[in-house]
Length: 228
Image: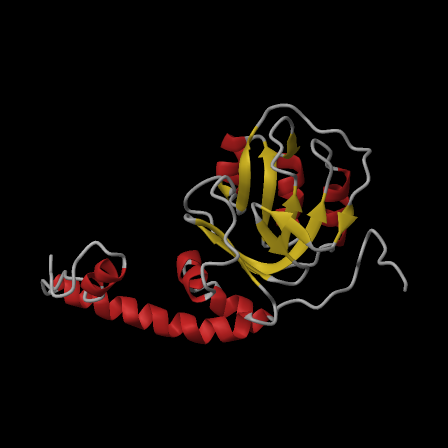
């Protein structure tokens, strides 16, 4: 059986139509319809709450504190890709900063999601490029440890395959498997409609959660026939 090379250059991406539609939803909506799976740990957060991203995952695995393979990923990624980096959650050195992220923006990369540290926070506010990271550190990285590109990775506790749908906003990041993404959009449409109807009901004064009594009885909090 042949072994995949460390750098995989070609893979199937979630379609642009799916990406464009997914970008219209909150990450929370997509996380709900995906069964609350695929959400990254809250440590991977936007540099600024206004940042949002949607696109196919271009995955990178690095050793803690080394960004050699991220430089390679920037050279290989296509416009619209989201570079997703498994930095092992290490915060001892920044793996990216203004220079690398400016190059990403210039190349048309949709955004960066990195389970590791970055730096140049204030400059990134002005750059206008979506970046989600686990933290900040002024220390720079090394650039000599090998890694892998476009292999399955683990980022913030979620498995990410190359080409999967990545959506991030002020709440964080959710990843949906490429083949499941189209079906999730139909469910998201219904979820949005249901929540809009519920908000209308609340505005009219109907604040009661109709499912709550049954759930409390099932949990043993209320006895049969008892109400709040």
